[in-house]
Image 1 (tube, rainbow, N blue to C red):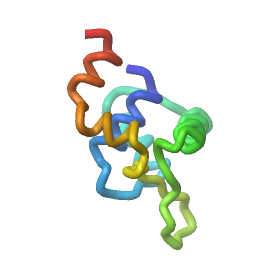
Image 2 (cartoon, one colour; image 1 turned 90 degrees about the vertical axis):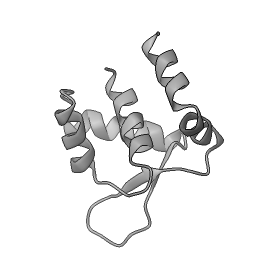
Image 3 (cartoon, rainbow, N blue to C red; image 1 turned 120 degrees about the vertical axis):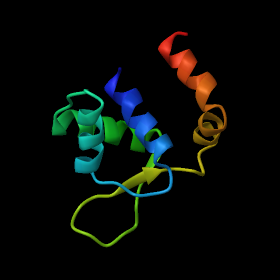
Length: 91
Protein backbone atom coordinates (compact mmCIF):
# COMPACT_ATOMS: atom_id res chain seq x y z
CA UNK A 1 0.00 0.00 0.00
CA UNK A 2 1.20 3.49 -0.81
CA UNK A 3 2.38 5.17 2.43
CA UNK A 4 0.58 8.44 1.64
CA UNK A 5 -2.72 6.61 1.08
CA UNK A 6 -2.13 4.67 4.32
CA UNK A 7 -1.69 7.95 6.22
CA UNK A 8 -4.90 9.32 4.70
CA UNK A 9 -6.66 6.07 5.63
CA UNK A 10 -5.34 6.41 9.19
CA UNK A 11 -6.80 9.89 9.55
CA UNK A 12 -10.14 8.87 8.05
CA UNK A 13 -10.37 5.86 10.37
CA UNK A 14 -9.31 8.02 13.33
CA UNK A 15 -11.07 11.27 12.45
CA UNK A 16 -12.12 11.95 16.03
CA UNK A 17 -8.71 12.64 17.57
CA UNK A 18 -5.30 14.25 17.31
CA UNK A 19 -2.13 12.25 16.72
CA UNK A 20 1.64 12.57 16.85
CA UNK A 21 4.01 11.49 14.11
CA UNK A 22 5.08 8.60 16.34
CA UNK A 23 1.50 7.34 16.67
CA UNK A 24 1.00 7.51 12.91
CA UNK A 25 4.31 5.76 12.30
CA UNK A 26 3.33 2.98 14.75
CA UNK A 27 0.01 2.51 12.91
CA UNK A 28 1.91 2.15 9.62
CA UNK A 29 4.34 -0.35 11.16
CA UNK A 30 1.40 -2.41 12.45
CA UNK A 31 0.08 -2.54 8.86
CA UNK A 32 3.51 -3.70 7.64
CA UNK A 33 4.41 -0.36 6.04
CA UNK A 34 7.91 0.81 6.90
CA UNK A 35 8.30 4.58 6.61
CA UNK A 36 11.16 6.52 8.13
CA UNK A 37 10.46 9.69 10.09
CA UNK A 38 11.65 12.09 7.36
CA UNK A 39 9.41 10.45 4.73
CA UNK A 40 6.45 10.56 7.12
CA UNK A 41 7.13 14.24 7.85
CA UNK A 42 7.13 14.91 4.09
CA UNK A 43 3.81 13.08 3.68
CA UNK A 44 2.30 15.01 6.60
CA UNK A 45 3.58 18.31 5.19
CA UNK A 46 2.12 17.48 1.78
CA UNK A 47 -1.29 16.64 3.28
CA UNK A 48 -1.14 19.81 5.37
CA UNK A 49 -0.41 21.92 2.29
CA UNK A 50 -3.30 20.20 0.47
CA UNK A 51 -5.55 21.13 3.42
CA UNK A 52 -6.40 17.47 4.10
CA UNK A 53 -5.05 17.60 7.65
CA UNK A 54 -4.41 20.41 10.07
CA UNK A 55 -2.17 20.98 13.02
CA UNK A 56 -4.11 20.69 16.23
CA UNK A 57 -4.13 23.75 18.43
CA UNK A 58 -3.08 21.98 21.59
CA UNK A 59 -0.31 23.16 23.87
CA UNK A 60 2.28 20.41 23.89
CA UNK A 61 5.90 19.90 22.96
CA UNK A 62 4.97 17.50 20.16
CA UNK A 63 3.20 18.50 16.97
CA UNK A 64 -0.28 17.03 16.81
CA UNK A 65 -2.28 16.50 13.63
CA UNK A 66 -5.90 15.79 12.82
CA UNK A 67 -8.12 15.39 9.80
CA UNK A 68 -9.50 18.66 8.45
CA UNK A 69 -13.22 17.92 8.61
CA UNK A 70 -14.02 21.30 7.00
CA UNK A 71 -12.41 20.22 3.72
CA UNK A 72 -15.11 19.24 1.19
CA UNK A 73 -12.91 16.54 -0.36
CA UNK A 74 -12.37 14.99 3.07
CA UNK A 75 -16.12 15.06 3.70
CA UNK A 76 -16.71 13.31 0.36
CA UNK A 77 -14.10 10.63 1.09
CA UNK A 78 -15.61 9.91 4.51
CA UNK A 79 -19.12 9.70 3.04
CA UNK A 80 -17.97 7.44 0.19
CA UNK A 81 -15.09 5.61 1.85
CA UNK A 82 -15.72 2.19 0.29
CA UNK A 83 -16.02 3.53 -3.27
CA UNK A 84 -12.95 5.76 -2.91
CA UNK A 85 -10.88 2.90 -1.47
CA UNK A 86 -11.88 0.63 -4.36
CA UNK A 87 -10.97 3.35 -6.85
CA UNK A 88 -7.55 3.99 -5.28
CA UNK A 89 -6.80 0.27 -5.09
CA UNK A 90 -7.92 -0.24 -8.69
CA UNK A 91 -10.85 -2.54 -7.95
